[in-house]
Image 1 (tube, helix red, strand yellow):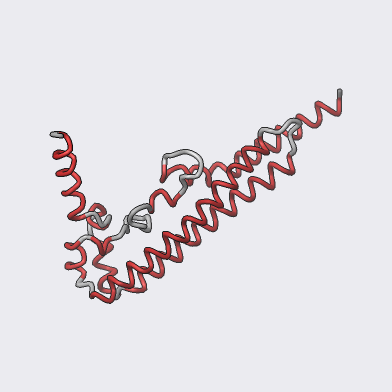
Image 2: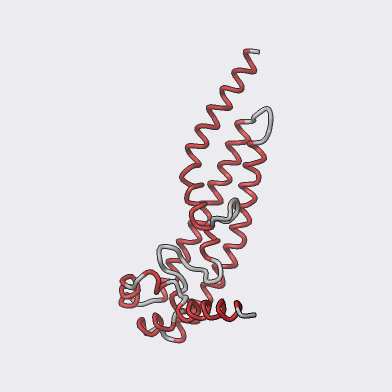
Length: 182
């Protein structure tokens, strides 16, 4: 009986420590997507493959592209970077989902296995780190396409303008109105 209590106590302490260590990463993970497990930062990058921190696919907004005086070559480069990043994020998001699944499975085991839980938590952290590193590398690549003057101008633009929706945002409202009459 003493051994059983000791195992439960150790497992509880390990869970508390892991929960405290994982809380910041999991909080960041859930902030963007809102779809529960597996949404991750990639959910914030869907359909425009934005970069977070207010820089979305800004080049898709004709007004922003004109204000920044983006060349056709720059727009092509930005599109290629965006497509590559989207493909990378699919794999990284899948790795994050798998890590969360394994973490959940480890947490559901009885008797609790502190080592398995710790290993699964580390896999979640590693998957999160991989996603953040990819996002940072994408940010660097996108900014490297711009001149310093273009980057400084982009930084001063309102956040809503940099999201890259421009014309599409207006059209979405019109589509919704047309759809109501059918």
